[in-house]
Image (cartoon, rainbow over all chains, first blue to last red; front, top):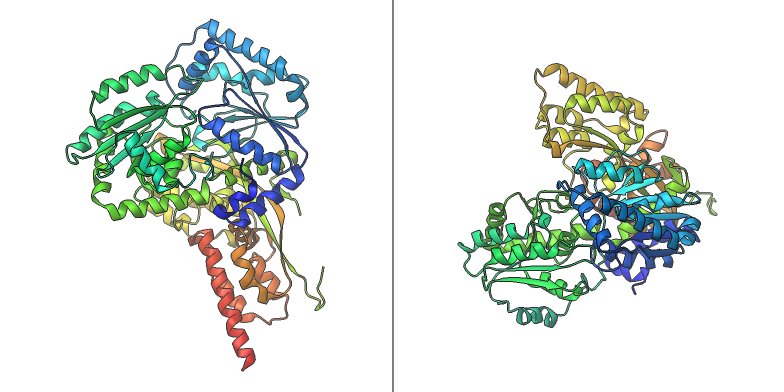
Length: 412
Length: 228
């Protein structure tokens, strides 16, 4: 487990001092985070790191996970798709099961949640918990990690009433925030530079993935790391690769995905990906376990360029991770990718497979630019998207909430 | 507390901003003007100053978000240039600054027969901020310590003392100048050089480097002169 001082050599001592000072007025507060999975997906990864660091800073912090049956996850996956704009029809029985599951979890978690000073509820899955806690004493905050910029209205209309009574909500980007009767804070997520997924690796470990996945180290490699999800457009990535390969015959593509326990749709998309790849020996379709962090890290470092050709994206932590490895990113012009991929600086934003192909060819034909962009990408992440910044914004928000939302809080 | 020479020490503070979406979005100049008439003054602060603590790339092209949006989303260079010269430190209050921005928008609306629209996904989202100010362990008692300490304070501390100070102090100066002025005119040349630093077109890291260089050079020169 990482200690807060371990981050100083990456962020600078001043950033760590800042966190310690901010945490002083919050020491001893009971904080609880609640989400729906302990493994898989960006939310779980962030909580694995954030919770121990909050404890180290003196906040009494716990992480609780709600449990549900397969119908529950089918329902919440439909919510996820609907919130991202997909037209989904959710049977009434699934909605009743969703509410009942939350009621049951509320009973289990009642002693912890009722006595907490601050409760962070992550994403829609546990959102109704608040409704079953009429005797709660603390401040409840709903944290939305999803791109809700254009939700499918029936889904949002169903979920919205569960959110009305929260004291505040947190959104990754201002474009995602939806009208709710409480302050809506903006906090982009982050990556942990010391996690297995992001830490520097020995060359031998990078070389190992070449042989393990039958990749030719002498030929260019482009990679997309993400779940097999239609919004990540893995089929579009294959089309882009095929277009670029006409000009770069040696080009190789890796699609590295994993499943999350709350994602039942992945298998259908994976089959579409196999069909699109059509047994091309230079396309490697990998289905990695959720704990294959060092493998993903090595694959990103083994790549020349990282793609994230999403058509919808919450924030796009895989983009942040790639940039941290000093790799330029060709990303879909959507959501949080826009905040990270700055055209001609840290990579390129594209809207089509053809655009991805064009930028791939450009970068692989201008190696000096590729290298410079990668270095700028890494610095950009160091300045803005590391876990320490994320933690600081949570602490700031808690301080502000403790001071009744005052515009200016002077702790000195 | 004053030190033995009767001088107040300089206690470095730090700050963080919490950004809050107001839910108000503008797709053209008229909508922006209408929203600006009613939003909290915290919005004006955020879009003129707060952005300095947000993710930025290289040096900012404009010193406020309104100008940048008019240029990049509306492609209206004229109003972008007019907004870009608004010096937020030149106004006694946030209300006065708000009125100036509205005046510029109204002037442009009067000039144009057709107003340009931004694409749906390039709307201006009005954001307000809350600031939390807290202590740091850094305190100095002599100006000669400035070159040594500045590289070690955070960029947000630089923001607080060099940019935010212009909003919260009566004569709208940075905190270093205010402190040095209390030293009986001893550092008049340094004050003049600090007044020449324009904080709006460099990143906070660059600003910290610029101040470090300025203090280092000044005190090295003063030391040399003192020995001659």
